[in-house]
Length: 358
Ligand code: BYC
Image 1: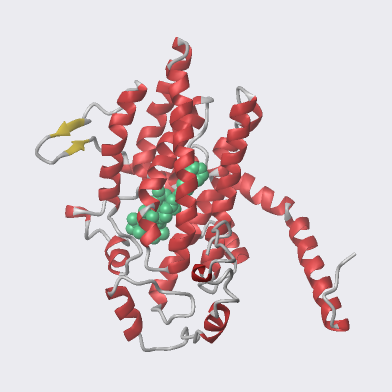
Image 2: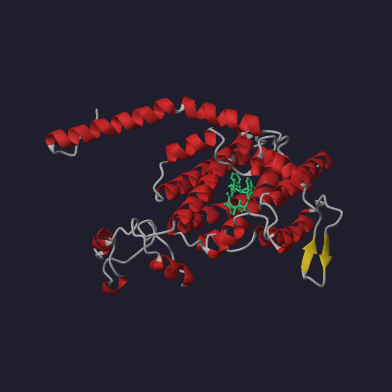
């Protein structure tokens, strides 16, 4: 039950006010830990019935590792994704814009926290995941290796990057792994606010001076192709056998659509929005295909995509340097929190009381 759900305490038909009243705590405690079981019949049946796998269920090791890889990469993207827009907080053009931007960047930190928590239910510690990111052993989204050169980039990120993120993440709300699916529900609600604020920011610029319009167009030109590449490599038709994860992840109900299908949906959704805004999308091959019922679009620069993934994008080095520095600078906060928790635990066990650290 969500914290804000309301139940009338005087209504006998309204059900229990909290989990403890309804026996749910006992039910959860009685839930058998099946992680060590080797028999995966139940796992296969749950996947076939399109139900959710939960942390204490038996699951194939490859399923667990795939989820750790994807959820960690997603979490890392959220926290590294705070940098490009965070870059503009001190230079936002008005108090209103500054407040919105601070809230948005803070939301991204929150998404990172939901996701690291979801990954931890798979039996891995978030500090280990951060170590892997910092050592270059895990990735974050390619999109965050591009610079935010003007204020209009904050609009283009909201409109295009968050727009692409929602397209990718709404199906993840139905992911077969329960904690990831649930983390995505709240994330998507917030992302849709982010997308609208980006559209509205560009809308204002497009109704401003010629310089503002040019700035909005320039940002659209620079973010369009990286946003399309964000969906990942081609994985349908002749590309289906190229060794990506899509086939297996779809069979497991982790991914619900191919990268190419989501990319196409994104293009189809975004072209009319661009027309409303009055910006031109930088693709001469973009046109409606009556027969397919979709927009055709040009070829993504895949060499650039793989180059960025290898660490050779415009901002990879800067993003990682800032991330590692802020992790180091935050060490005293983590140490203080751990020391406080240890002190409380020690008091609690020595005198049997609740204990409070002074
Ligand atoms: N960037 O077989 P594929 C946000 C890698 S943040 C980097 O398709 P998969 C926001 C892929 O990892 C939202 N790497 O893989 C925050 C794999 O390499 P490995 C970010 C990419 O996992 C702040 C290889 O290419 N969203 O919204 O089945 C401000 C082959 O790919 C990328 C998520 O993380 C990429 N773009 O599918 C504003 C969504 N694409 O791991 C906004 C969750 C592919 O074998 N993740 N690769 O070495 C997913 O849905 C999937 O992981 C992907 C890739 C669709 C991204």
